[in-house]
Amino acid sequence: MRFSGISWSGNGFEVTVLDAGTERVSAPVPFGIREADAMIAYVRRLAPETVAVIDSTNGMLDGRMMATGVTVYRADPQSLPPRPAFGSVTSGELARAARRDLAALTRLVRNRGTQTGREDELEAWNASSVDAVAALAAAGHCLSRGQPEQRQVALTFDDGPHPPYTGQVLDILERYGVPATFFCIGLNAGARVEEIERMGALGHEFGNHTWSHPFLPELSHAELAEQIARTAEVIAQANGGATPSLFRPPYGSRTPRVLGWLGELEPRVVLWDVEAADWAMPGADVIARRVLDQARSGSIILLHDGGGDRSQTVAALPMIIEGLLERGYQFVRVADLAARAGHDVRGPAGHAPARAG
Image (cartoon, rainbow, N blue to C red; front, side, top):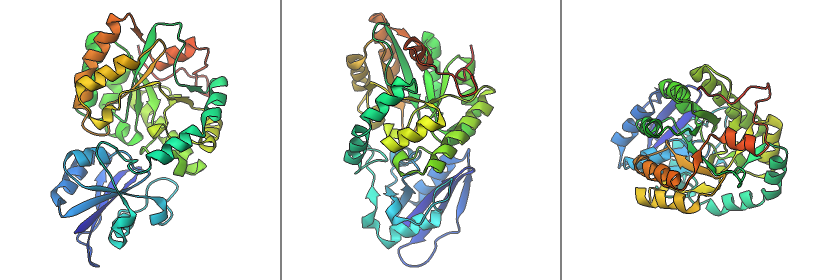
């Protein structure tokens, strides 16, 4: 067996391959910010003799790799040396952690995602944060849904931009004349400027979804601030507009400490009240039915345009839009829901949310 460690940085990715003995199969191979597909293809060619290893700050790649048949493991902080303030540990360190004790790592399951094996921990942390969420909401810094008196809903999409699915989602939204809010990954936004430009040109709203889709409770305050700041900057540069003031934590992960930090950093935290678990690929009909069954006035609907194969989400989207329109719902952006709920969603400098149209 061989082990391919996959690291990330502000410039892209790196892969180091080790064999089961003490030899390095290849020198570290760098891949630029626009070369994620090439990197995945490189790792795919090494399978099935080689397993891929990521760390818990990297939630961008596992779904895409597993969709191609790659076996992926997650190395948690206790198995690794300290990481830098921005970026993962090196690809060699990730590969060595797997070679040293693969059983200490977690094999990821495609329909469970990056957080395979820690779902109970995530649920417990989120449950411990109820009061902190309520306090942020009372201060106008957190929104899980809009006012129930307004027959409006907001479509939101996480983890992109990711071709071809983001473009297909945009095609459908344009056909129906429906606005949406896209919570973008910094690495993806920097790699797909043309998709960001198109979102803005069509009048959609931008949200910040961190640079690398990390598990927030394992970050330091400085790491969290850097993830948010770098992502905001790249989205603003790509769109030629203001930095996005809306922020969605990856996996919805939160603790009272993380929410306290977010309150200091001043993004407006956006959660959701309708989730179809489309990332698990239960089928387009199931995705559409779950959304239509859960949606209520003021709902924030969570879907995905990135992070893996999103063909089922694309197929479900017309059914979702037509079903909600038939029930008399109007589609709005998250900022519109927030404004009607009495929340100030302007950025710290008084900027409106970054959008055009």
